[in-house]
Length: 147
Image (cartoon, rainbow, N blue to C red; front, side, top):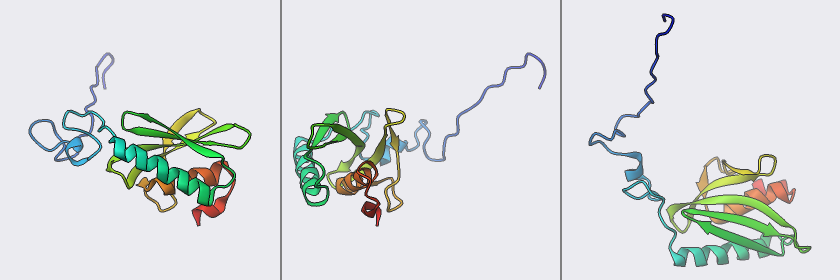
């Protein structure tokens, strides 16, 4: 390289994902629409998700008084509420186009953000109940959630 020479970097584009008529990654991901926007979570899925998470919390996590969910675009933010009213941010779910399949991101209190993470199954997605168990196992200090 010579002094003053400009280096341009071209981002890696996997085969079959080019915008020149080939497939795009969005075309194969049900949570992303054709225009690249995040798919909207249907109201029926929101309702069933809230019910399923509340039921799982009652049966497996008695330390929680309730579960709160917040919906934003294709994401669901899941918080646990302790009996004294303290709110624990737990995880973020990404809608994958199906009511029984969700991407998973753990809440990182040390960074006050959500990090895409693996479930104990080794997958980055699964059921909402699996995600709740994983996050509660961490934040309620119960590693049996991963066995």
